[in-house]
Length: 332
Image (tube, rainbow, N blue to C red):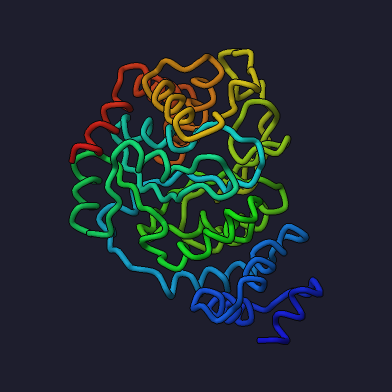
């Protein structure tokens, strides 16, 4: 183990087995605080390679609580971002999940409390009254009767609770920002993944193209880990890579106000923004951004063109269907 740690601190690449062993040692409590904080932040110096990511993932998956959602995972989607882009946007991907469910599709949303951001999706859901659960029957009922379930990462990956303390103390992105999108215990086969760097997008693409997942990995070229409409984006899918200019995506010619993409300074402010946008009362910038991200997700789930899926997303938001999905989920 000392050799593995030394190699890591010398910026040498680890093999898959070395990475897995390192992560298992960390998660099983066999490292001190200094070692944990160093390892979790060292990948700010360089991105992990594919072997390291797979090794880390295998270790975390080995220690996780399992759940069987095979009746749903072929048709369900998760929309998630790596975080760590330091843009402090409002909770775009979480709102998009409810919009998608409001169109009649299934969503297996996996999320966590904030670490490198002010408010994570789990902070929002908990404050709104959602009860985190690992009970398979309850989660299946959510998918069957509401169209969306929410899987809170720390109760499926219990070791994350301790690690999150160090992540919060650091206040910057860590290797767990990179690993988070890979860790969905519900295993949905469809994934819209926002990534905070182009290099990392390519790494994810390399990993996912060797799976049976149906995916779109998006990176806004000005650094956002979602479609912000503030810049052009690069998108990687099962069919290869594609470049979208922002004018092509912003078909309604909305003037994007960067300030309106930002979240608030605390949880209460962010819940107000969340509910306002989910109610269809967001600003033109806020509405357009969540609709375009939702459209990309729908494009993975059906063979409709962009305009048709955009109209579906818009109807879900403006009709109140998306907000009603949240109400049903909280009351189930």
